[in-house]
Length: 330
Picture 1 (cartoon, rainbow, N blue to C red):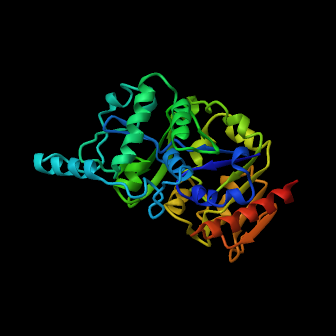
Picture 2 (cartoon, one colour):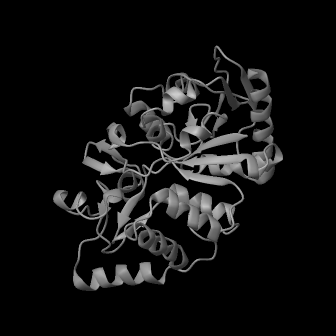
Picture 3 (cartoon, rainbow, N blue to C red):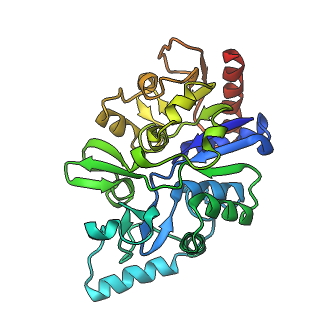
């Protein structure tokens, strides 16, 4: 049995090779939900959706989000209407009092749908409509995710990190932004002062999460701050990880992030923005997988390989290194 902690695109890319070492029936994936937002009344769960689409064999692997071959007519129409009506463009938070009005799960991450700042495909939108409708019928996010996992034919167990609202908020020189606003709306450009996981202290892990962490845990090459950090901020998660075997794959190739803003965000939370910083980001890790050209030294087992993942064959190579690391920790 093995459990993957997943966020962004790093861990999903690794999961392309997971079957080489771990059977799907014995694999659990705990997904970050700190990136979730409500956009135009629809609840969007980007990191969960990437895993749904990947598991269903319909993921757009050029972008690592959305559905392959999807159309974007609704998104384009929204932009056209906003332009014709003279309505504002870009990310627009609903007012502060509206942030906690309505479905609780959307708290502190509610955006206007005018000229949607995130590109959502038409078939992709059907997933969000279904999820939102299930939530409005009283299902939890876990229960809604189970229904969607069945629809996409997943063979692994996919669990959101929490059924409670946790919002990854990035404090920048231009003000506070939700992570999606910072990364998608502003291209990660504003300088970051700090990162907050609002709601994490009062949230609880979703059913099955703590039990899954009793198994061997693999943290893929995801952003340690905004992809994995929200999970670690939940009560009980870090303690559970300290009691089990944890193998972490570096999201850095030397001093450069595997993808995304990992370096800038680690620096903002006073962590060394390269492989060396993983020791403080994941103090509970029992072993690390780092690039073959990375000379970082750790005081625990370290496996070196080519960690660039551009194909399923690359993913299998890194997964074999993970398997080797697990053996060395026993």
